[in-house]
Image (cartoon, rainbow, N blue to C red; front, side, top):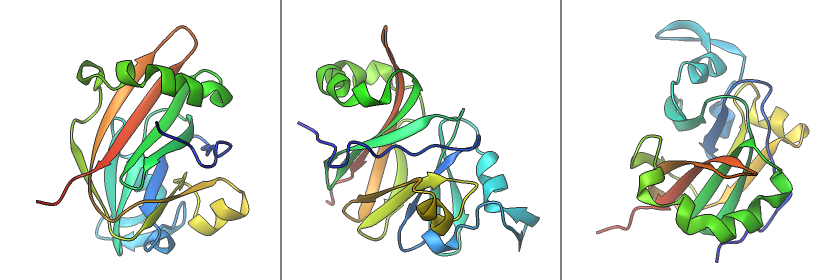
Length: 183
């Protein structure tokens, strides 16, 4: 059964998206700081805000950032294993109650009929860990504000499916990240 080794970890946003970035590349994320790109002067935050739907990617200097988009939602994770992660975003419901709920309802939540976002979206993790934080921040600022989740994961290619689950007490957007087995 999945566990959350740090159940109090919840990251928030000031109104825009969150980003998930390999720790080897977090220093490349500039947040709202403007820099020159092929698109002209633009911030990484502005590029992240251009993503439509629940998920998308933004290229950064040494890799790629996964953008967790849509409306601002408190977000946490359940580390199922070093090769599977559930990123849980709360549309409504009590954050402190989610883990017991996820344990009880996982089979229903993850039925294929509930996939609402991009199916089988691919994302590569190059190192052995990554961080989730507010796209308007730099990683260092997010750390100073204690608004970051650091997660250890095996490197490799991941597939992400997005589930939208509603019950009487919760509405959750869950991104299930699973390592693609090497052939």
